[in-house]
Length: 236
Image 1 (cartoon, rainbow, N blue to C red):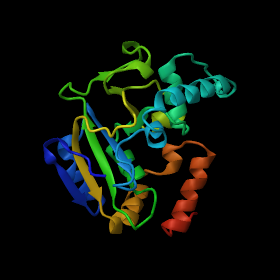
Image 2: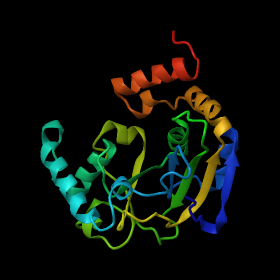
Image 3: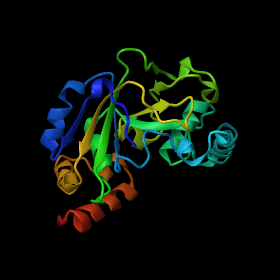
Image 4: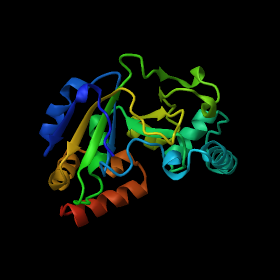
């Protein structure tokens, strides 16, 4: 699925230096990035929207949320009752929500774009901005019930999980999650499929690995597997 891009700005890259050159005008405060490993599979749609029909989405979404909110309490070190915080926590652990993951780091976005070494497809990094203010950034005090919003927002979450801090997490909140998001997209960077493995290797050389972005034993194990089995690097 193709996405309209602000000012029709897109670029194809084949290595890390080309990527950094392509995005140099879109780096700094107010720019946010999302990497996807298959350009045309999902568009920019939250998980809840990808899995549910428009007619069923609002009812089923709230059922999913309240069940997660109730049963996740035992796993929370610092319990929260704020809907957006619980949605953010659930989103980070794979819950189907109306949030879509972005990051303030262009290298983190690139990592997620090339993490899957499926060479049948190009990957993509999307760049959005809160400038000008037609896609507004909000904090948790500025929104009531996120299931009742009437426009899309950029949400700066509290970092209530270590992965969120490591990944410089930002979310978009979608008022109609079954529709493709297209607001204020500044650029689309296409990573050519033949370059994915080499770019992943370059990111590893620059310290962008799952053990950094997922600071736990799962992240460490995934990194070791990737370095040895995928990238062919020995481990001392």
